[in-house]
Length: 148
Image (cartoon, rainbow, N blue to C red; front, side):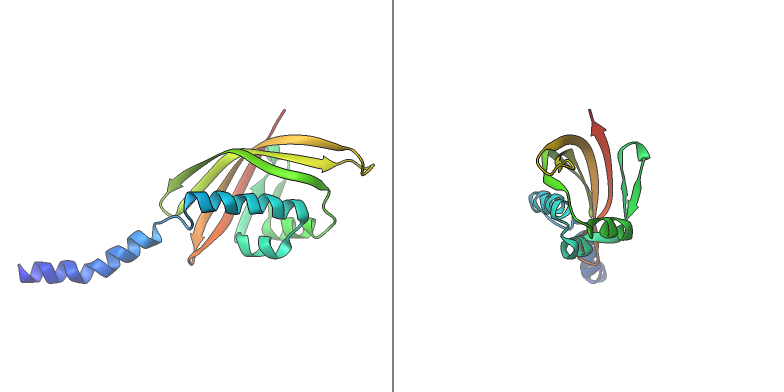
């Protein structure tokens, strides 16, 4: 009996470490708030925030696969002037599996027209995958579909 208890006691730190590593990188509510910060960072071109948030192998598949952006290409695009009036999300749902969380919802963007006075609005269904990378919550992938 003592050997069994010693064996279980020896495995306990390993089991705790495995279960801790299988937890989402942030509680769902905090992750949804972080995702709203991602939308705002896209709107204003907040490169430091995005550099910290995006996983090294981040990929964004745009509507109908018409464009695929990687971390470097997104950061390069956002280094230019940003033309969004607003970016907001709604109807956000979280799907948690181990240390991975997929958020899905609707993103509404208002983009300035060339005249700088008027804007146009678009709505997109999105799926964003967040993963735990060395104890940090990273955005790994995004897929969007235009809702017309």
